[in-house]
Length: 450
Image (cartoon, rainbow, N blue to C red; front, side, top):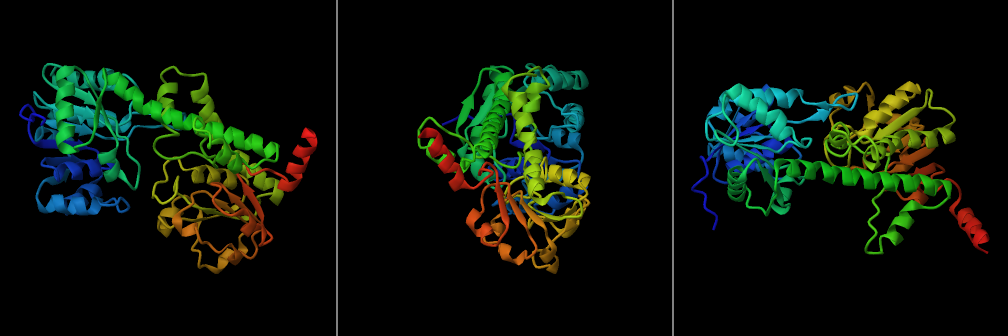
């Protein structure tokens, strides 16, 4: 059994109470720790202090927050330094994104670190869970904390890094099932971090040799996925040229145990894959597969719209319906969603843009300067073309026959049955489903081999 006697205290500060931060705080608070959460959003703080989760689509989270509130083990404040003063273990899960020029945007976490340093007590353990570029934990944040607090890392406070590795809509489950990677400034920092996670999460731990190794591992995971999606998209575009269905290719190719071709799509979105590769690119990885994958994946929206325009002739004054504002199915998350890229490009083409997403309210969709659409509205009879951007479960049995004026369906996730769309005298466009008639393609292939 692990020895927890060397843990500083049972009080934890969780800095950043977004989807992952709140889940961590609630899990810790239900596993024997007193948790002091900090967030800059007053509404978030108020909600948590009433025992109400502001995150509504994360299974099990609302119950954990309520139980922690009732047991008085979870509270929240806007004053980060105050939360840190009450705790000897500090978990940092403040978002780091990229700006419009794809440069790393440290604004929020820099401020959080400054506030942490102001409230830090001697002997505390600080663990960063935010995805960071290699070297940031030690060189950017460790040194800043030293400068402001007057405390020395490795002597007066301990420093570790353990990247979050969870997936929206299953965070609680993933915290239990995914191994937790942990790197420390030194052996003492690593030991304390491992003891904390063993007690607070009870999951498998993988300790690595340095802070930088742990940081690198999380970004590498995202780069791997981005590169492999880019390969699938490249193959899909080539399959279109050769009149081959990429979905059939993937199915048969992946029957070979060493083939793991991903599925192509209209684009890549979310907090991770389209963002974190730039943490390497901005630190010097400026050529090769990593930046090339970003270029390929970001061009898929243009590629898909060009296929549509070939059929429609023009987008101007056409009523284009986008199904799915979220970056992927069954989540409420618009960060870096391909829908935003599509909206921008269609606006430039002077199309009339309508958006439906069951995860968002009408007012939330209106913030993107588009027309929200309910599938019960009579205006669906005026839609000229449909783009399936995120295939929510609500679209699985969607009656496309109700779109009586629709001429084209772009299936950006290759989820709809092509024959069902064609039966309605609509053009079906998938990603990598071949441009021409599939029978003609097979005959031409047979001729060339004969």
